[in-house]
Image (cartoon, rainbow, N blue to C red; front, side, top):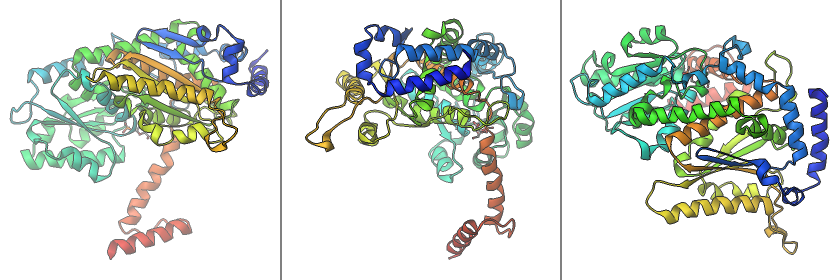
Length: 510
Ligand code: F6P
């Protein structure tokens, strides 16, 4: 049997599975729980409420073998070229290895900052970092900063600025003492328009308050383009490099996480990396039938292409993980939202669900109505934390109770033939991930799990997850459009755009 035969078999399996229910799958297989759950240090994952049986899983595992997933992952970890369209390796696993060469400058910087050796231009101690970056240069650090509030080992606070909307930079700088603030410009390319625009405002702010040389002392660049950072006026000794082959959305573990390391402290930062490393080892050393990221990718592959559920909801029952859906949106949709294979042929398999989500229980009062009763089932990832670090155990139990209640309601539904309004069809798939605690180690593992799942899913669909050509066209057009808003009369666009420009200019001038 080859890959195509297996895909055909999977399509047949979908017909069989569609005729049964998730509840029924528990009845016909007494081993289901053991087969579909995996526990690692600090993390337990239950796929048993997904809508597939052992036979389907067997076919999916065959497909993974045929696609040589394990070999591909080993090649990626070894630094071989896996990002074909850009002729680059994918270096994120190496960034969290203990002997990685970017680790020492980060450790040294954090130590010097905490000892007060690094200060503001007049010798004042640093209390704040303004982290300017967007997409992969901001989402990961902001998520972890929020998530690990209880583990932050230093008094240093970070404010994040991503959007080009002046409201963001204004809010971030508001109330700060410039003499106690460092500004980090985090941009792999050092040419992202939003980031450079915000960085200029921050540079002026430092210089206006502290004198013309302040920005050269208090601004840092985290970038793969040291030349451009130098042109911007950032001193070579304030530039933290990271390599071009580390994708933005996989870059949290590199010096992109510098502001995080500063606020968490070196030990917690190391624990975050250690958790991710443990997940890397699990990925590379565990047989595929017990391999968490591979299983999760196979299930997502199944849901997208055979059960035809094109969306996925991410619902962490932990307020501190409320940015996880945003981070995953970029990770999954920017990596896998593509219509051509790695070699540029039309892709016939879907690799990117529409990802959305919010923290539970808030999400229950927003989009869960549709999850329970809309005609199109949406697979859900529930993420729970068993022991939280807050001081109200009742609240923690309420969160877990809600998580469990929702996953039952989705799977079992409620039969009410008398009243269709209160009938719940059930049979809606979900995965539950339980973390023992929200520690740096467990969070590192969770994020690495999703990174690997995304890459494996792309490989199953023959897609290159490491490029993002789809973001370029809009960037080019925005530059031209800014000229039009500034008064240029060309280039001309379609009728709708021209009418809109006219309307904006008229309103603006009134
Ligand atoms: O959105 C496109 C993108 O290139 C992302 O891939 C990246 O994370 C983000 O912009 C920021 O890019 P940079 O780090 O080069 O500023």
